[in-house]
Image (cartoon, rainbow, N blue to C red; front, side, top):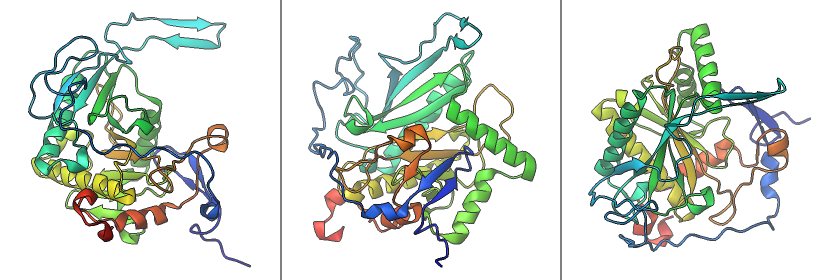
Length: 353
């Protein structure tokens, strides 16, 4: 009789940060694919696009004119999902249905005046400038009355719903703590109360001992494929020092974060030789609230591509009705990403990748 191994047999894995489970089915990697094929995005973007709402000096959708900026920039989203002046109130219908007002602020963060430069194509100092802008915006938003949580994130690529190809991210500040953050807050506080140490600190120490899912580490950060990863090439960056917020990092730590961000996004683009789509976000502690002694800074990357630049993972059927499922194991995904060169593929001979 065969002995169980999580590299070959169907099994479930627990997400330490949410307490939820995912089904892993390694044997399904051999199934043929006759489903939808995505279009490979055009990589020949101009440095400046006169029709782009985010390029310097251009008119935005609401008629405002962008400044002639020479670095990363920020402005309030012209079509924000959250508004700062929504009236306070709530509605209860039949003691079952409940709705309550939500206030907030949505900001857009342009990474560069260049229309054609994504994160892996920026220099380390240019990425550090983006990090500094994240910090400035976070601090400014954190002191606004009523704000409880601030989400810094990026949707990269049309496949992830990005409505403008100019490389940019967003910051949403909300008057309540979102669902995923509340799950992570509960798990981390529970662990800290029981053990007196950070959940993610103990987790990355375990990963560093085994090295199966580690992609890279530097003096201040660990980059890995989480044991519980849901998306095919999902990754997570975790700081070695337990902090709540990005602005608590030293200049040296911010430089290390910039380097690991550049390396990760380069690995992604090199994997299928395409501008690799993903949704990514920094998970920082809630603001203006207590009960965050166990929170440990980390950043998630959720890319949808599965087998190639044209085949993506769909969350449908069982994933929507029961729980998430993946075919390729996190260990296999980590191995593929580890093998990628750190020189950008568009500057290398084809034979080197």
